[in-house]
Image 1: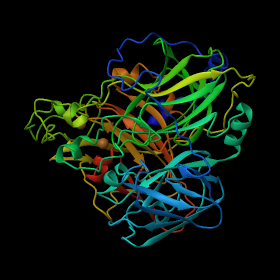
Image 2: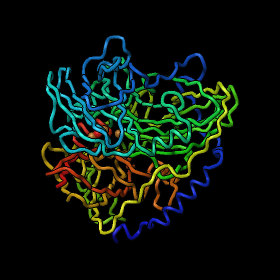
Image 3: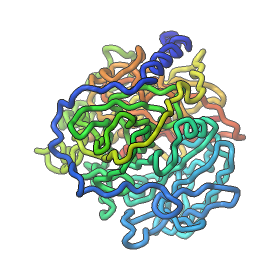
Image 4: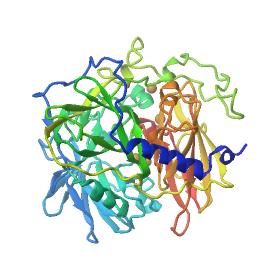
Amino acid sequence: MSSHQRLPRSPARRRLLQGLTGACALALARASRPDDAHADLVCGNAGSTQPLPQPGASGFLGRIRLDATPLVLRAGAAPPGSGVGALAYQAARKGTFLNPTLVVRKGDPFRVVLDNALDQATIVHWHGFAVDTRNDGGGSVLAAPGERYDYAFDVRNRGGLYWYHPHPHGSSARQLHDGLYGLIDVEDDDTDALRRALDLTPGSTELMLVLRDQDPARRYASSVAQSVHGFYGDALRVNGVACAHADVGTRLYRLRILNACNARTLLLGLRTASGERIAFQVIGNDGGLLPAPAVCAAAFLASAERLDILVDLRDAAIGDTLVLETRAFDPMHAELALPAAAAADEPDPHAGHHAGGTAATSGAPPPATSAADPHAAHGGAWPEGAARDILQLRVRTRVAYDRTVPAQLSTLAPTDVTGAEERPLRLGYKSGRWRINDRVFVMGETPIEVARDTTEIWLLRNYFTSMPHAMHLHGFPFEVLERETSPDQVKSRAIDRQGRLPSDLGRKDTVLVWPGESVRVAVRFDMPFAGAQTYPFHCHNLEHEDAGMMLGVKVA
Ligand code: C2O
Ligand code: CU
Ligand code: CU
């Protein structure tokens, strides 16, 4: 059965979105009481927190509006005492900047010169951007120490939050961990309209939140176990600050959130100081604004994913505190349950409901540093899936605010999948490596070949004896069509018959695929570039990417 026959046609989808819009036009419903203890919070009380830094006119994360003059972005050692990390991107333009937030309008020129002042090769990738191979910075070409690399293209992406980070194969995890990353704020007519409708001001009522679990005082240390499971730091920082707070008023706030952890997945939610859980509205994600807001009780956010949400403080009282938290969930590192010497002929765990495919589980991953503690490789001090506070929103001022959330945020037609070929892509572990379709990345090889201007459905299947993988495609946004055989903690949060989560709507460039799950995404391979282009498709657990859980894609 071809999958497009099973998907509802656009009228059904439109009804669904209208239903959600109706539900969230009013004040948000209060969600259920918490059932897990917040025993291991790093900071809960006033006094121990620091003000949330925001992108300003200069400095760390400062906003630089790009224009026709190329911006020189220098990758090198961070200035001593900056607290950003050992490494940073620096730029100068009416002030000096560390890891600047690049602001650009859809359709406008993007001119950046990477200046490599590191002692190793690097390249910058503009995560989520629809560009040609030359401008993608996917790792096929690197800038050697002392070299420069020019980027020049016109921005084709929808308005939204994108980001940039190093992409030299084998060293991406290290360079990002050590401090090289930044945001890109793409503006378009829809994002302008949203700011006008809700009276949003970047830096005060529209807050950027970069979530990382890397300790800026430490350098990256690699290990075999870490390369299999991923790097998990011991505390969460937002814009470089652990235990952050922001003083807010009684109105709507927009939070634009990036998970810039190397490997850690989060389950984001809001609660009051007394522990009451509060729903929020998802208005956008990786690929910009959704067509309409969607009510959400809590959202998974994997490495590289973005979430654009509205928090409603209109009914709050002065003195109230709302806490953005990551909640407890099962991290499902099911690969740890593999027998130490899994048989090469282990049956395909999907054989019961999927035809084809071979077992990808022969040869178990190495255990954590201590075999007795399977969680040690997933954050000894802070295991993946354990709850933590991220940010306190402290209600300090009563403000007059009469705006309401627009029922329509953007126009986005469902991807036309008529006649689209389905391409199966299996995610699994075999012979000591994470693999896609049993293969490990080889630079220059493109096992996936796609005809330009066609649409494909990619069927991403993860084995039961696996771990979650955040799959990212360069160059082309995709639409999540369907989740099948999802674990309960995902299925229970689905909002439609296709098993999708509120954060799956709209357009994505990274999608988390859980053990045992199959996710169908539709990719439109539209491109205006002459000649064949190649792009990587990889897991955004950066340790997995560096270890070769990546394939080349050729579009010709
Ligand atoms: Cu965010 Cu290939 O990367
Ligand atoms: Cu693992
Ligand atoms: Cu992975």
